[in-house]
Image (tube, rainbow, N blue to C red):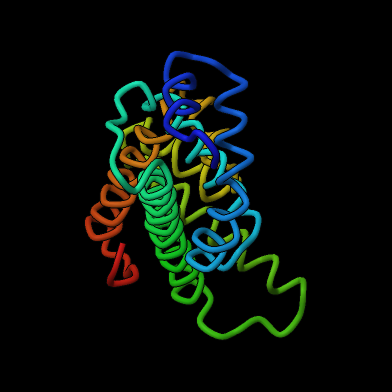
Length: 193
């Protein structure tokens, strides 16, 4: 980017046009060559790109100029956001797997028709609710919002009136608590939560 150091200095003081220049210069590269290859999903990559530039906007005043310019710093931010998303997604998938394991324990065989499948889903929901009542209400709420209702991280954070990073910590603790409650009730869960 021409005159990059001057543009970064202006953006660090709050100049939105300068920040827009940075976005236009680096967003396509970060999206195509960092985030999409790491995440394998364009929608997730768009989410991480947004989070990357929000973080960059907040932290640009503390950025220390180095010979490599701004790109290495932005690339590190993007990779960290992608890793955060992958970790959160992995935990969510493992917990969903635990819920499905309960379905297997509750029903025995695979359902043979849609009505039977619906009955098994209902039985699963009853078992999950029985476990959720044993949890801290906040943990139960985050599990319901994120996993049962499949709301986005941002929606869950807004509903719980916390930051997205705090939501991730809350969800992680809720998953551990869910597993402990399952153990207490003698229910089998997936080995990794």
